[in-house]
Amino acid sequence: MAAPKSKIPLALGLTAAGGVGYYLYTAGGSPKVAEKQFEKDISAASAKIKSEIPGRSTEAKKEGEKLASQVGANYDSAAERARAELAKAEAYGRDAKNDTLKKIDAADRKIEAKASEAKSGISSWFGGK
Image (cartoon, rainbow, N blue to C red; front, side, top):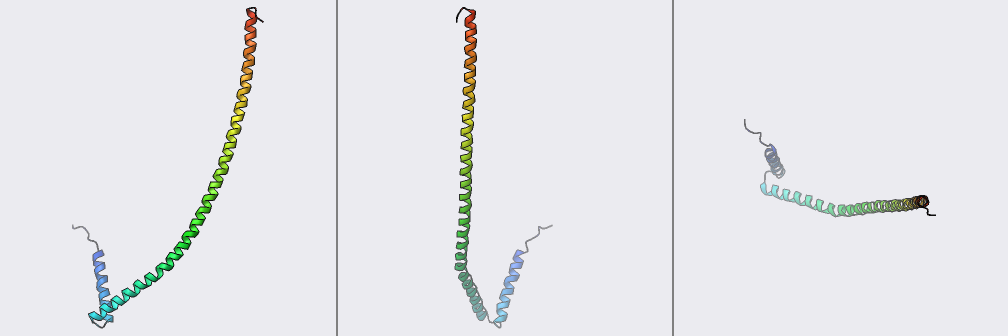
């Protein structure tokens, strides 16, 4: 069994033949007149497309600027929120550090006091003060 062939070339051929037939029919069967009509239609279509492009580029430029300003505003807002969160985190870190240092100092004083008591207790065993 042969592999199925694509029908695209057939469709393109039929479309081209239909286009040629249309131009020949409207030109009354004259190939020269049909060719001139085809060139005229292509030229008109090209001019129409070219005339729409500048308007669209201006429109696209305005849309692009609007979108860029919205993105910029969103970025600025997100950056400001990030700065605020960073400031909160730094403050929390400072507070946690200070609390930890206070607890360490308190533990050191307690350990030194207990060590001092233990030292005096041991010294008294050996006749010290």
